[in-house]
Image (cartoon, rainbow, N blue to C red; front, side):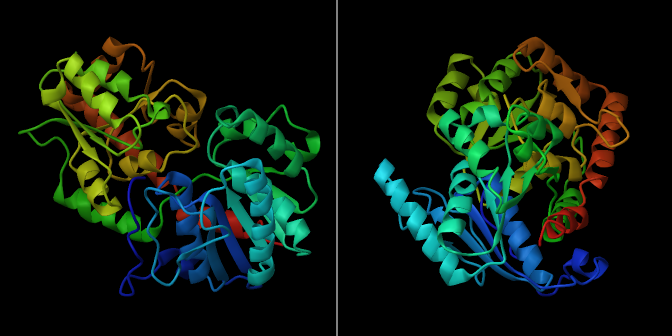
Length: 392
């Protein structure tokens, strides 16, 4: 999701900690990402770090290097630490980064390292071995393997097969299947753990939902949230907007395509019906989402989108692209499709489904109910328990 942290509040109990049994053994855990930008993997890692700390574990949140633009905000007493002050600019710089990461492991002495994003996944097992540490490494994948740099993906196949990598988490079964071409010793470590929202975010969404009942008569709003990058396929949504009647489109997020998307909206003569909100803190982004009537995600690929889970928690009907990860994300455990799956490149088809939701009250109510059904299955308790079960 977009933006910074909503910190845990001392006056609101962290509910999952009350329901899960106390861990048999407390660990020193290091959550590592490649960089500390305000992105989905960083959001999940920061949430997990806070959750594990609430469970009594000693937790460190780390990145290989800081992001040069936006940094995911964290709790004041759980700051980012870095192996390097800046991103390496050469192959020699990356070799130095391995040494710096090994030094970090010696200083922090973790029992287990959880990694996210390709560079961290590849470098952590090597650095852990160089450090002389006996710590276990659990890597993770938040998007399909084919979306990675091919050399990093090949390296991941080798380092993920190292003995000190004890498990490899994927956030969906579709992401897991994207690694089918790797060695048996790699694939045997794969474990699927779906993403979920921490209780403080769920509580905030409940409060927002109570303030903004669906289907407000004065304005009908489609919301899309996520970085303005090619993966999100926002041009498809703009083309669909051409065919929508009495519907406004709100897009929340910043990124490299922001200027070109604004220009494309003008070219399509929909700029007066499309609002680009840019990068926003998470509270503000969720407030925009809560004012929407329909959530649309025309992405070319995803892992297991936190934005989609947030929209489901609000009971917004979900319209997603016809790709395997998205189909899995809107399918409940009993096999019911809880969202509308469309070919996002067919602008008239995408617009038609959005328009029907807006115009047909019974159709809208059906998919709002399905969305809430899906939301009930996104359990933070289960996610925490699954990650904790991977600890040695």
